[in-house]
Amino acid sequence: MVVLGALLLAALATFMSAPLFWERYLAAQAGAPVRVPGWYQPRERLAGSYQAPAPRVTPDLESLNAPPLAAAAAYAASHGSLALIVARHDHIVFERYWQGSTFDTLIDSQSFTRLLAALATGSAIAHRRLGWPDEPLRYLVRETRQDGRGAITLRDLLEFSSGLAPPPAARVPWSAAARALFGSDITAALLAQPLTRTPGESRVVQAADPQLLSLALERATGERYASYLSQALWRRVGASDAWLYLDRPGGAAHAACCMLARQGDWIRIAELMLGDGNYRGYEIIRPGWVKAMRAPTRVDHDHGQYLVLSAQAAGAKQPYMAPDTYAADNEGGNRLWLIPSLQLAILCTATAPRSADFDDARIPNLIVSGVRDFVPPAARPGDIRAIVPGH
Image (cartoon, rainbow, N blue to C red; front, side):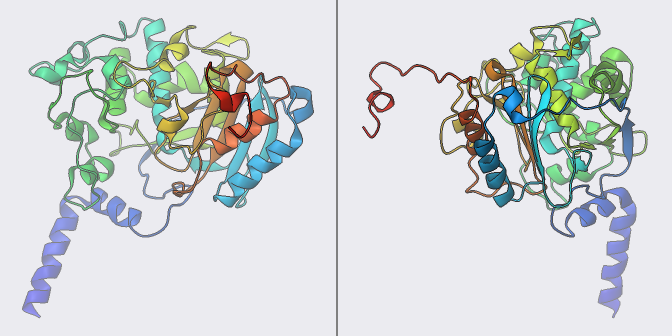
């Protein structure tokens, strides 16, 4: 009994030393993924303007055939999806919903969240709140001035090439990764990550890079991250209110994950990106920034800035039918594919990560196969299989 009592007292002391961490950590381990994780607390409102979504038209009016859309929906449904939404030329042409969801259902945006940091950086540069993409971090975040981390640039952060040592991918409570996700001082956690590689030389996906980007935005604009995102981006595309997960009351917002938003609002972001910063006739971000985001990076030609540029890099089992297809870099169940040449956006959401047999090219390829004005790329010289089927 004495030993048991001592263990209970030790457990209580551990909990009381960091109650917010333990509440989140234990809640996250409690069950299967859900649409809105309850442990994303506290939250900060990302104010929207609640404008009407894109007009809905029939697929035929946008030169899309119905059978391939139905096949794409069947594939999405068979892999546990919540929604499949297809838009073309700023029109919603196809929608299917499962598990009781709708266009307005609130979901965990997962790694879509970091797209906003990249887009907001373009807005801040255009409005001269930030200097230029290669601006060193030491000019913005004073805590980096005393060591090599001050040489990290905004471009490095956008390309996941900061050179910071990522924490091991472990969820045990004493791990650095758990402390960053569930802890109450994410800024201190990421500033404690040592620089182990030369910035700009290798791509390593980690939360520190978009998180440092959001910190740079706050320091440069003098505004809370949520406030700047709202007035520069989210309200201007007509989205509804969303919520960012904070490390503590009044603390830093998580910029790499965990944003709660209505799933249909991501079609607005897709339309903005297809328009290279123009949304329904209004310039939200200076032209050229989104094109720069989807250009191959210096360190990995299969990736842009928080974007995947090739089917192989996305984990697909077949190439993209439209060569200019690109997708939001993902680490969960959500998918967003964009095809500028066809002005086509495809959103497919899911609560849980996709299974190993999910083909990341299947849905966009099915839909593209039904676009009546799609012109397949010319066969490469010497590629006889594209000329004579079966060879």
